[in-house]
Length: 290
Image (cartoon, rainbow, N blue to C red; front, side):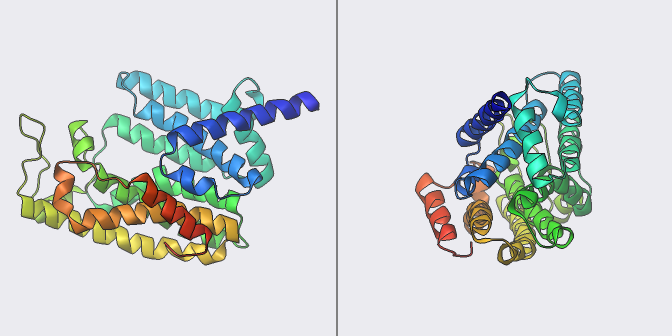
């Protein structure tokens, strides 16, 4: 029993290191959780990181798709992967918190769509993608946070995940386009007369006013999803509420910053300084709404 305990502890320690080093925004919130929940959510993040790293890697598409299939197999056999630190931690977290592991299947589906270069005609198409890659993490996080009504609150966690992913998409419009990916719905591009085409130097060629109008429209849509998703906060216990508020608050501020000058998205990647992230986390811990 002692050896098993040490193995689980080592697995969680590894996941917490991964989270601290790579979760540039989420780690500010995760730190606010009590130890048991913090470790469980770190296991969720570490597994999600594995999936994302495969999907976003530089290997040929066929290799990445094979890698995603392999990590899906690992997901479905966690208890047998005793030499896999992330699997050991995630299996223990699932036993403790009843994690809805099927949400990871949706994340893998979303990453497969990325590898295949899927484009989105309508917002409903994009919403489904956002639900796969971010709403899934919201539902897994909710299981760790705890809720008296998981079915009801899962819809709010899902909505908050969509809001965060829409923020990511706006932040990364230029970077994604340079990598051959367009996430904004094609019907919206046509509506605002934009193409997201690049010139020889890798810069967006769309008219600045038209592109700003398109991005502002998408930002307003993301704001609507925050309005729904943030209704989750009062339904969580204090420390879980602080964690969720910090994670959402950092992205919410990022969205607000981009929307004050949307035209800058065409030339740079907007970010928040560390001091501002710390401020959001501190206010969240004090009970402030993001």
